[in-house]
Image (cartoon, rainbow, N blue to C red; front, side):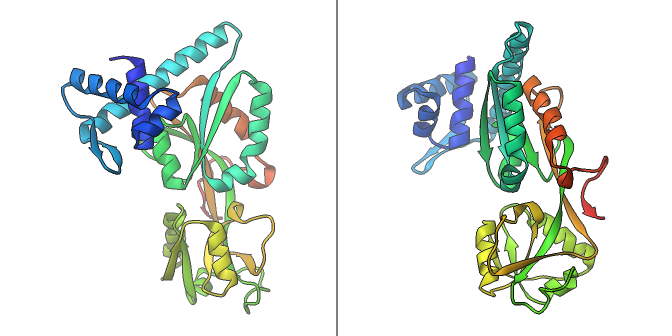
Length: 301
């Protein structure tokens, strides 16, 4: 078993396709296929189910992939620590981000980190809340902005924003300074399917209300366009709201409800030194308006 085989295993597991994995690793599809066959032969069991639509991990493959992620993370950590010892703080850092954090919180952090660590190559992967959490758990990224946690992760509250009710601009409630969840629940609801649904449902549960979900939509832009066309109303985090909007009004909830964005790292000492450095810098760079109060985990204020 070699590090190259483990890297190939992870690339194929991540892409679900040997050709795309080969392109990502700058090698050939035949080399990828050969490396996996040798690894499966050495381990004595199949790691992938091969089909017309690509490949997926077997249960044993998922176990091997999780261990491979830890091994490769430790190898990268060793490389970084050696680089630091040589005063050449280089290496790479893969950052998973949810769209609202990427748009409003990360650009200044990335600029500051690049200035402080010019030899580090950054890769930013943007995905939905569940996707980013999965990337962090499987080792596809080294640090991530997440809104829910999971076992074996180290999380630090990073930013907090308000949950806003979104109505058509001409709605009779548009001039109010705040609305209740009950006000929202009286209308057809457009649910965010991009990762905020558990948070929205918890807000609704605390209010003792019941939503009439007519639509489930992944993209925030699509939700806002549908609200503008008076197809329904919604609830979204403040940071997900574009700088300029047309045809909608966003109103704070009363009582105030908030979302906490966390910075997640692999637990059990598996975090890369540069991932820890990124976390420390990010906590200093977050805009004051969205900075977490110590111990804050979101919910009602």
